[in-house]
Length: 69
Image (cartoon, rainbow, N blue to C red):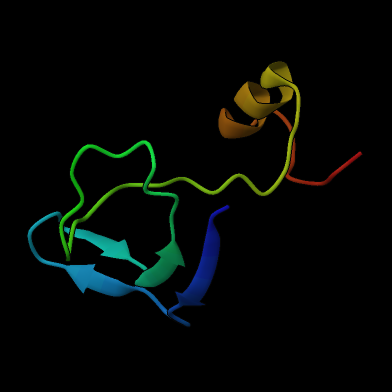
């Protein structure tokens, strides 16, 4: 089981990637990993909700507002 143990309150700017990132600490299941090194960096996405693809596209193109139906 994986569990986040710490997430920074605000992001910091990374000069190498020219993007903002949050620091987090988590536990991971190491049974399936081949190599794990201290300080490894990875990418993650957080999904906070769901909506139909057509609504997402129309909202991004500013055809509909951001209000939830």
